[in-house]
Image (cartoon, rainbow, N blue to C red; front, side, top):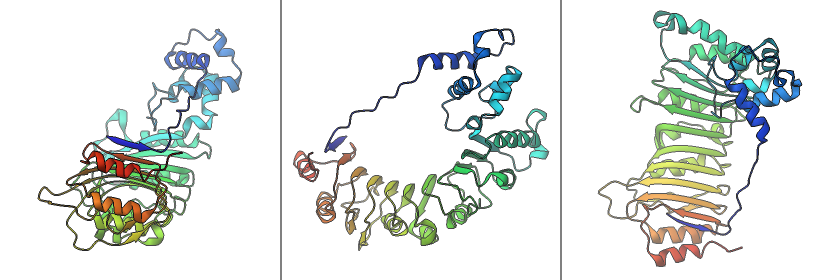
Length: 359
């Protein structure tokens, strides 16, 4: 991998308090009711609350599990339960699951949906209006989860949706606090129509979208209205064809970061697109095995504000088109990363380095 930088930033170092971390480890493993006379049980509420926050798993979303924090903290003693239940920051991240189409018909006694739904609702109530980051894992139908979330939709700032087969759209327009959205599909052959409907009307404050295991071509992206996507600033997406790439640039005039995996096909005339705000572009392109030359990846694209470019490309590297793109864009490039799949000569690398100013 070749990397070109205009400067090298020193890594920031963040330190945690060793004493607090040690105490957090003690609490996480303490399920005994025999040590309530120890000093840790006489700590002020403010200190105990801080320690509880250190007890949370590092997972992005927390599981509803009685033997893991924060649920574990409510089972040690009455005071700990009062402190934990009264600390909203403990309850702002949650993974909710609804895998079966008919929970009433298939549920087991220890894992029936009404009991689980009650637990989820109790957890969310403890967030006390704080911003929520949720991950929803679903088999096919969103109805039960959507009904459960209804009282909290104005709190949800980050939402991750994972599903086996999406039969019905997950309507997002009322999630006014939502800023980040991830959608992942576990069955690659499942139709995208319901997902397309979900993405056609977006919340007004949504700025980031990430899709996984879903491929969008130009036709599918044309289904989305310009007004729905115009406010997006960060996108991670898989695309089929160069036309999908240019469509994203036109859909999202405020886009500052784009990360995509794509498949290139032969195009006779490259579409000209100028995007004034894109600063970071990370892309991995594959070409058909029969491709004999460049497929127009950099033709017609102008990115005058681009600062970071990372690319992986299987196929003949379009050196001349790439140089013309850099000259045409006149971008303040600070970092250029070419994956090992990009086959370039030493002379070509020198040409690219000339476009990166040295501070």
